[in-house]
Image 1 (tube, rainbow, N blue to C red):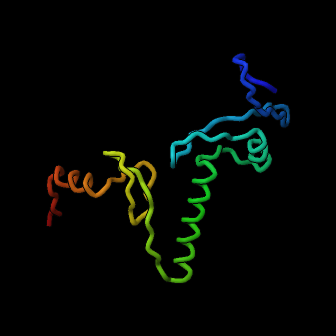
Image 2: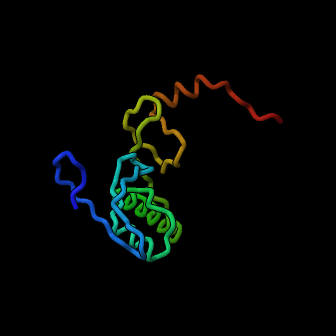
Image 3: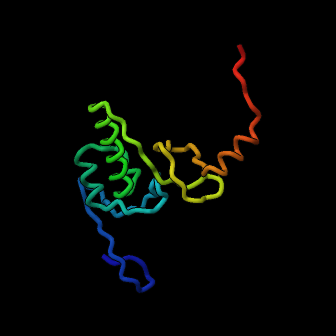
Length: 129
C-alpha cells in the first residue's frame, strides 16, 4: 500500500492481527538516538509472544548489548576479567572518546579534558568523620 500524497513510493506494511491493524512504527534508539522501524511483522511477533513493551534499541545496538552481557557472563564463569574499551560521545563537548566501562543510561560520559575541568569546578567533598 502506498502512503502519502507527495508522489513518493513509500511502502508501508499493514497487518491485521486479531482484529487490530498493525503498521510500521518508527522508534528512537535509547543508545544511539537513531530512528529505526519496528515493522508490522515484528509487532505481530511481539503480540504472539505476549510481549507488552516495544523494543528500545535498534538491531546493531541490541547486538552490542547482547555482546556486552555475554562478555560479563563469560568473565563471571571463567573468573578472568577482560579489559574493555567502549566508544562514547562526551556529554559536554560531544567529542568521541573511549572509556573503560559500559556507560549507564541517563548518566553523562565525559572526555578526559571535560572530566578534569568538571571535577575542578566541583568543590572538594571530604567525608565527615
